[in-house]
Amino acid sequence: MFILIVGCGRVGSSVARGMLGEGHEVSCLDEDPESHARLEVGLEKSWEDLGGQFTVGAGLESEALVAAGIERADAFIASTDGDNTNIVIAQIAQKRYQVPTVIARVLDPLRAEWYQRQGLHTVCPTRVAIDMLEGAVRKAAEDSGPGDPATVAG
Amino acid sequence: MYIIVVGAGKVGWNLARELLDKNHEVTLIESNRRRYLTVEQELEHNVSYGDASELWVLERAGIQRADMVIAVTGDDEDNMLICQVAREKYLVERIIARVNNPRNRQHFDLLGIKPSVSATDLILRLLEHEVPEYGLVHLLDLQEEQLEIIEMLLGKDSGVTGRRVGDLQMPEGSLLISVLRSGKGFVPTAETVLEEGDEVLAVLDPGKEDELKALFRPEGNGGDGG
Image 1 (cartoon, each protein chain N blue to C red):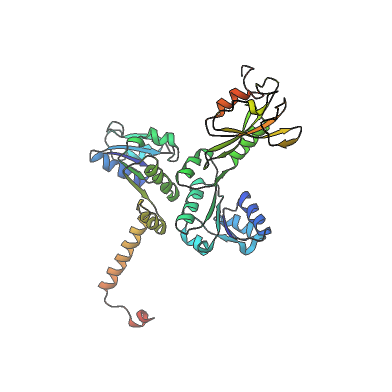
Image 2: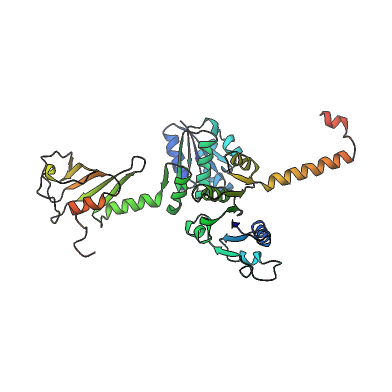
């Protein structure tokens, strides 16, 4: 599968390495040329030697998307540090380039949920963090027995 | 009308002021705290602090009952998504979005954000109008209707001066709609004879420009090897 990842920060670069390691073809697009170094963290060879592709450019620029291979992408991941950018470029990938699988990282839980209902696959790390924190607190509360009835009733 | 304006930059602030003067109800939303405090001194309760990309900020501003949302922040993604959410989630009937970078207009179109307004485009149009070096000025693109309106100045080399409008072999899909002569405009009839110095307006199907140019040979168009 050919996977295009826009936004090569901690999340994007890790997903990129993971997918390349599993034998997929991976192309990354990022505005910052320095983010290329992040791709190679823990790798023994260079990103390109391992078959990866890296393009410098913005996700809103059609030329950059095309150079990064969006026209033949099987999957598109929007993982820049901006929710709005991710939502916009994911819709561009979906509507203009008809990429079969499009996933956007959206930190704002309310919008992640709404866009999900509109047919955009969103992943919301904030939602995951909320659920994990609540789960951890609930677990601690159960372990320490029932709470003070007065507080619960209040 | 209840109008929500997003972005209290020069455009948003002045727009909000004008709309208030016209007795509309207005909420201006600004996400920069310092800017908000400055604008708040004048507009008081008509300005609200927050990031309008967030749904609860829009809801607090009363987007459910808004008749119109105008997004004029300096960020195109923000303007696109604020308008998209306004229309598709909150069913706001009228939206207007500002395009900061004209190259992003295609994305506004793709997401169905219309109308979108780009200051750069407006100035370019104005410039074309003031400096008609191509002899053929785009006045209006009626995108929905698939029509264009153009203006041509007839110089002495024009192929149509001295001829009756009824005798012109106008390309199919084009129509002469008005003539401006010595400061006065009129609608030409078949009997009208075109003169040097006339400014004519034509409405046409897109792509008919070249045929029309070949017929009218307007001022400043070719001939000088340019």
